[in-house]
Length: 544
Ligand code: G1P
Ligand code: ZN
Image (cartoon, rainbow, N blue to C red; front, side, top):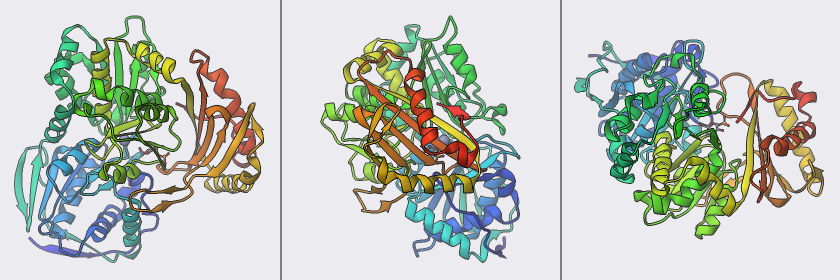
């Protein structure tokens, strides 16, 4: 078998965003595109000791091009003289499972092939992200280095070897590299079994409790069947859309009220099950529903934190701290205060939680974008959140709606929505932001939608562990009585620019109509930022 050094030239635009490099699938299929990026990862993670004693894992969410990409990466890994490559059987591994594999097996890192909740297919999206030895997403420093390497690359390494069998567990040698196909469920299931009391959850299902889990034809299907059906004894029809498909069956695998329509309809129907949940393309997001009841991700984070110590075995010693991304609602802040533990506010993106968890500063963290997780791994974890809710339901014996209402009674309610304006012109959107920046200094003291603006600034974060500073992380208007308006541009899109507008209004009165409260705020914000003037838009594409 011959190792190959293939000449190449840098390709522009291989800059990782909020979560790895995401592009149109056809872009990834261009000559050298994937090879350049993967070799640049190898170049960036090279610590000078070579790769012969290192192990990496690889797996993806099963979307179109997953299998072909894995075959290419097998050859690049062997070309770079990697010691061992672990591949999830069938090329499948959820993002949280990858984190579990890296941590439990103490390996150097892993490559996840996924564009998360973006649609899949030859005309849709593909992505690659690298996770480091703590199991978490590459830090900004590393993704910046990877980007630099993509701009300098002149050679990638490969090997002359045909495609290998990735569908059967086993191991082969390619050059100096051992390639092992592993069960992608094993490490993950073992990890959650340590946290949750499976006996107690079995009894919940034995008592006739009914749940519906929508895997959205994406990666969590096999995990959900193993955990809910085989291990917890739920009936097989508990899991819907449970087989990973290359195009997710045409579903947009983003578990929110708009895209998880089948699940939402069934939970809002007459004979609805007690509990509904969904996860996204790569299994790190979650949607939580009760009978005709939607739990916002911000409330879900707060409620999991509130009950963790009593209801979930793995947190019986209490929580060290809670972290949330800046745009996420402040519901968790109130729980942290009542528990007497610190609350950390980080920029958007899971990578910022890693340092906090590695340093033992926080146990549970979450984002408004349907991501919740804990220090059991270093990624957000959709099924973990579902197991948390099952544990809380089993422990309290109450319904989802009762649990949330009791939380609001005790802490008040953050009425919360995110409005997404997709497909904006990039230049127009950045001009709009520039203009808004110049206005910030004069906004404090003014009134917006009947609320006084206390502070208007651009969020900047100093990591309390390593002191690194991340600037330009979203514009915040902090309003009186615990309300906020946040604006930022998405870092995960593959076409056009998406403006995210986050609206939060806090009140001790928890039974008001959310639209009546938030619509005036939304309209006033559209006026303030002159969205119509710059981007010819007034209305969002998606409200979650
Ligand atoms: C979005 C979410 C963010 C999440 C990321 C990856 O990023 O807003 O919370 O961490 O996807 O799942 P954005 O497109 O806003 O940059
Ligand atoms: Zn995801």
